[in-house]
Length: 190
Image 1 (spheres, one colour):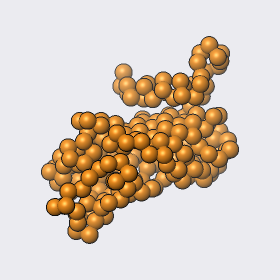
Image 2: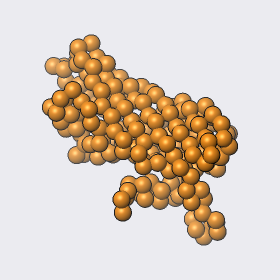
Image 3: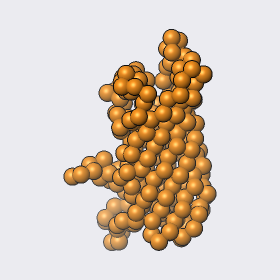
Image 4: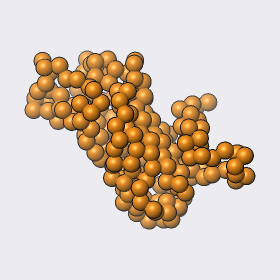
């Protein structure tokens, strides 16, 4: 299978939503993405670090407003140097120990995500980075048009919230808070 992570997310999502084939003869429709983009930015006094990934996977149930997203921590590219990327993988995100980051939860607003239009909503859920769960409420702009959905958001993640420690020797080169920007295009599927 080309996207085994998407299959896992879909199965998790269907269980998470309380759907089973025995409960409903009609399969629920979900919005799914396999190539969402996540950009990270550390703007410290002595260094600007930016990287991105196009491997965000996720599903959104438009009827129950549940969602589930995951991204491989080793999928981020574009650091200032290969050594910096290696330090990110090994020393900060510890990708061998914590290979995936996730965000799962529910859209707070009672909005119909099957209706064309712009929906400014809050997504409330559990953000898991570096093996640490944190409840977060994140503002998201959702645009629905012709059966397709685009979600965009930008928010800050304090490294201390996820037990990511910055050595004193590089304290001026790595920001204590990382800016995340996310954009994902979804299609409606059965």
